[in-house]
Length: 265
Image (cartoon, rainbow, N blue to C red; front, top):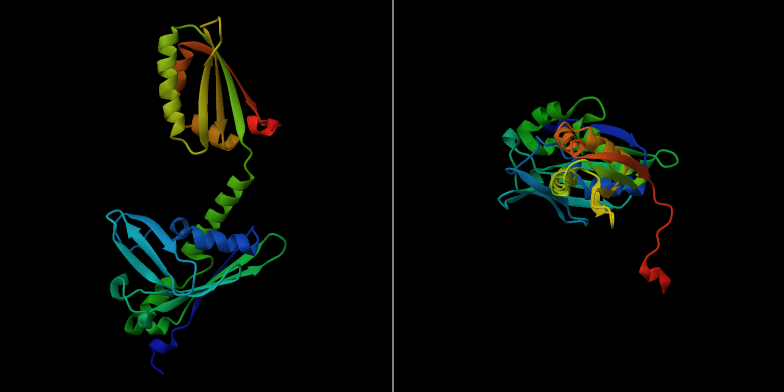
């Protein structure tokens, strides 16, 4: 047995607060979010996809349309296990032969109600030949490692979004400036908010018979997103411009009942 063939596996684990089927789905469907940014074969990576079947590719696509496969799917067992080949060659450049690729084994084990231990193992490193010891040295280290640490963050973010309660901001404005100026400033403010995570929509209303009285109804995915938006330094000039033209009275609400025209049928 050669020295390269003696290269041991590298195994790392993390425990996440979602059931195994959800942990598997986030790993399989969101690789662009957890895959380390420095591990890239193309320029300006815009997507990374794991095809959900044995023999499928997992590949990345660059901004210029170039796509390069990191490997192929060897095992696909939803909620339990994924095995992929890992086509890394000298100088961390891609190779195009699975016979010279090692394996990434990902196992999902229930760890109590609503929890899953995810184990990621780099196995068969000897298949990289002379560079196997160097690859092992680069991968070796304490859990969870960069990949699983990023994955854990994605799981937490996705879980938080799923639990988020949408909120509605009702903000009454009594003008001290002109309606034309106010509507222009408000449009610019709305454009800022529209670029923020969690924003859904703004609807500005003017009171019939009172052109100096307005109400804005804004919908946000959750209160945290709204708070994060108004905390941005870029919001402060918008806020100052609105205060110069109107007195506002903002209040937050959560939906308790929703009825549509379709419900009447």
